[in-house]
Image 1: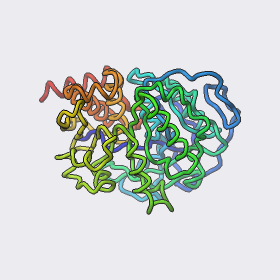
Image 2: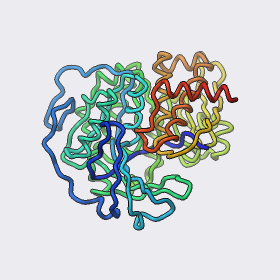
Image 3: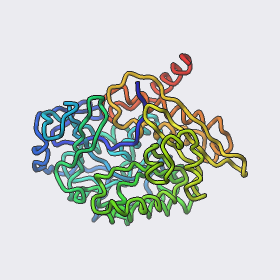
Length: 401
């Protein structure tokens, strides 16, 4: 049994990944030291992405949701319960939390744009092919000389993941560290229902500047800002002592925060048990400009608390997990978030939830269905549900209750 977990990155390697372009993963039997072997740079395909030297001509297509942040590959250890030095088989899966959310939204039929920087390498090509197959607008994607990020992920006996380091480069040498603020699509963001970002990019100065610029564009218009805390210590290194301040300041600019129960304790001092039972304690700990919070707790379900319209009492609630046969929990939190955003777009934006608690509760239920379905298959992106699959799982769960 399981369900949505925390938002994750998802997927890495250096082999030729194929299988219908979008639903792919390959197996290679190499130790982690081989993951860092040199990449083969291929001539770039012409697609809707910009380089540092190119300028965006004309307005980008409007999107219902704009996702900004890292696109990467996880090398998932096939062997469970062993350290990375003893792993013989790594299975590469594409992902990165913002890329996962963009792909999941595309699969649900939401119009979505993706803002990132990816390498001029095989992994970059494969990532863009995958997102393009999900109908994600790639106009704002920047192609840079640095490599596309790859991450080593080990698993314990129960299948829970642990991020165990990087493959081809040092943490601060990957493409996603170099998103150019000057190429952030102002028009696209201002005309979106929501801008979605994580916080990993805040540990890299250039990308951090781009993230803050994107948030300023969103806040200058009707676009809501949704921040997924997605705390990953391995990305912070020398900035780890300043992480709480950096992340909390950025999170304070959000309209909606998504975080795990552990992150609620780490960032706001609210014990994980209290956060799930009394999510209003977390909402009270953030600036009043934050309108709502979503708290996920893996197999323990999800809690939420939103400020209601016109000064009405807070709207809060809890949604239990949906029982599924668990294959892999990678990316389940990202699928959860995409399900919530689907409902938010359909409802007409954040204000609809603040005016109608039933709509908000239904949105969290649908989010749980999307997260639960993703747990039933391996891979953060390959396992994401279609709209019909998510609705069927939600209906089945209600019928069994």
